[in-house]
Image (tube, rainbow, N blue to C red; front, side):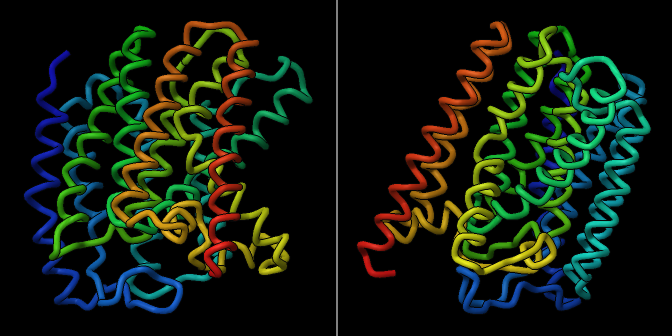
Length: 339
């Protein structure tokens, strides 16, 4: 496989990110700290634009190999533009949801949807509904994961590379190239997110990456068996999926939110990565810990991709048990520390 495109995407993002940092400072597109955020000083946004351009460059260099993915990228561009407007001026939750719904509708129009239910009217309807939930859920889950330096982009890179490896092994080299381009673009941004002169992805970048990962999961033919086919992306994206579910359950339990709109508006330091910091891990330690967990579930996805449905179900169950155990320890540790 020719790795020229991913390498060029990496360097394009790495070299252009400082330019977008200065641009964000000049036009005052900054993430202002408050009691719900970890950082103490205003941080430039627009890092996601660099990642977007890196992915665009890689796809352009290989356009003749996957023209069908152009529709996916256009839908992802819609997500990015909406996130950029939100970063600059602010948008209501309703508008963001409508745009995400339309972007998911584009994917379904392209024939991309979850496929594991019986081939009948009810099965088709169920798959379409679940596809909307999947796309909107993963898009926002990645955005929620963007709470500590390096977490969203690093985790997305790991997930992308596992998607690439499995798709290449399943004889889908074009999709593997797309995954490598996305992963390399995320890696190109990562050093700047960790540096002292840091820059954030912003909602534009995190939503764009989340949408791309959700779309890749729908595009790939991960297995012949329907249950295994859905098990692979669930395992690879287990951490952001679980974080979204866990945080939602805790917020409802603690009566912090009472509706979907309230949940999307609510911003707090109550995600899994925040709770890991609360019990004693440093922010960098929490990020590395989640990297290892994401990598381990990626290995599980590799194993499941050649297994039967029963193994896929057991692997998802195992992932859920592990993550639930981590979450319970984090919640108990937080209470014992008096937070």
